[in-house]
Length: 335
Ligand code: SAM
Ligand code: SF4
Image 1 (cartoon, rainbow, N blue to C red):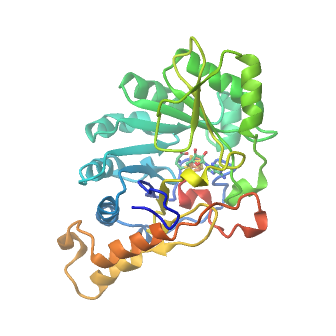
Image 2: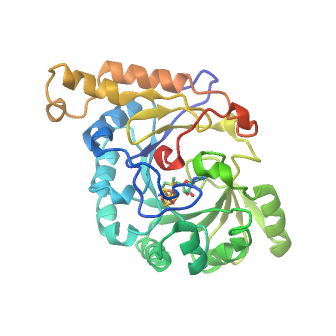
């Protein structure tokens, strides 16, 4: 469906947990409170929401978190979502630590593409950024995913004074591996507010200096606002997601759902629509149990979702810090 500004909204990111096995300092520093399991939507509830979303025109779903693979049954959920009529693709964003372990299950459930977040190719810096010694596990996961035929994108956030010079090594990986390496500008959300990022415009300038033959690539690589470039002789590409310095709100096609069932029409604002209450109200009022209800969405659920999509704000306001009303951490929004 279209929102109040006529944008076609066909992509939904759903977070399925706010737990994580890493502690990336700009996302989930130590001490972040974890939501009790009973507050998270069950997989049946997630499927109900996604069925309503598909009826409203959502075609692509990204499963995220927290770290989605720490939630038991995540691969099976991907299979359940792929089976929803109208859904064309279900993909996953992961830190890669458990990806190799769950790869057979993910493939069996029809996963075709995966985004792996990796901010450095230096294992000591990896530990400093994430708090864990899992670099080799992530690299093995990426290679296993590529070998299994998945389309793999690596997402990298560059932070000033932390890993800003690491772009050369990140890009070098795409020389010999058929993966897109994408640079995401840090947004002032949660712990991200305390870091300065690198502007993608500036980064592109530096990359061009090193690789003058860099060429824009207009073929479609994914669901969203990334722009891509190719370098002759490289097996993979280079992408940029420039939420801060290349505002793409005019073309925004997405909504987000937190693990607790709140629909967030825009990352910048705290406004959300609580679907969990609608999902559980019928249950509390003595209607058939949630399992007996199956996965068919109620009219109320669909109306709430339609209203949230319609009300999507025109643009984010990250450049005006005093207008940002979102106080949640990225770990509970899902990135
Ligand atoms: N754990 C999974 C992962 O790391 O891919 C999924 C969730 S994580 C929140 C999704 C993405 O959000 C990661 O690529 C992470 O780097 C990014 N992220 C977290 N905080 C951010 C921020 N403040 N600005 C931009 N991206 C951020
Ligand atoms: Fe966990 Fe992903 Fe956040 Fe890192 S970016 S702390 S892996 S949720």
